[in-house]
Length: 454
Image 1 (cartoon, rainbow, N blue to C red):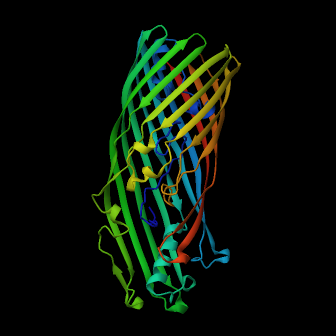
Image 2: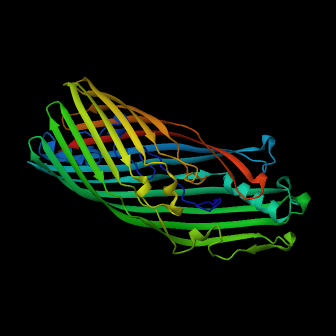
Image 3: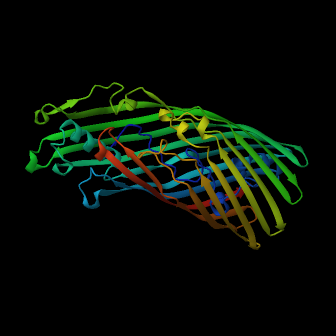
């Protein structure tokens, strides 16, 4: 794995949500979600995640299985403008790529009379690898401002170059088990839980050197090679109310306490000696003033998965035409995050979804859906290494009933993000350290799944 830049490293929790959902939660754990979006009132095998209580209303006793594969591709771009940058217009464009070529998941359920036992495996958070091949503005500008401050402006930003890059990966794997029970002909309930395992990695470097014509001596050298792991349990409760053509699905996932522990192989910050810049670099002690201190070996960082409430209403207009509306509430402000940045949010995440599906012919169902996501973002929450953007998403696809027991789902999911603008002064008292950023993202997901009833 190539070396990467751990820019700024002041708060490097590289957020890589390549799926739909909240800040740390993936909600598209089945291709049926990609093609319709509002699946919280589903009475099908994908309900193992989206509406587990509804499994008690599956039409037949027996064993159900769903196998899914998704491919997600995302860009995470930053346009930064600062007097520190000697470039034309004082602007630099940083392009990051996050990809997850194949994300597998499966759901399984066994129904017998009023009881249904279900299980699933999925990537419930993260799900990809992000790469910034030209680094990030937060560290370029930070180094520039520091060099300018410590040399009283004698070394200007056009006298040296910075070589940096960043890759980070983040996955939260989830294994869920639970039981659904039909209490009455119109009411069912669910109780279960999910074990979540976090696996992430950051390995990076940054080097700043004077240009040959200006002396060629080094100004900064930062190295990091750090893995992070952690685990936590999510209790889950659900209920489903089925009244004629109406179906109402409710689910509550409790907050998951999750701490990430560092397993650090390399962590080093070397900066120039301000009293004698040409004498060589000085390594900073690994204390609280070191920008890499959060990645010291053995240090724990909070990364709680927020509680989630979902509520959905489905209605059958015709035997061949169905629609659902749904609401998600993520309680982000109550979940512990690195540097308590959750306190900067103006509110928890709100999502609004609607979906329609139509049985065009006996063996073919067409569907589509819409989702609006509002995170309650604020400047104190956003950083170059972890930023989100409010968005709306569209999904469409088809379910092909190949046989009486076999259904194939195919779907495409696309998200349009609103740009987020942020301005700040990196070094107090140094006006030229002002930097204006515009965060932007793109996202598309393809999915193919197979459902089978034994």
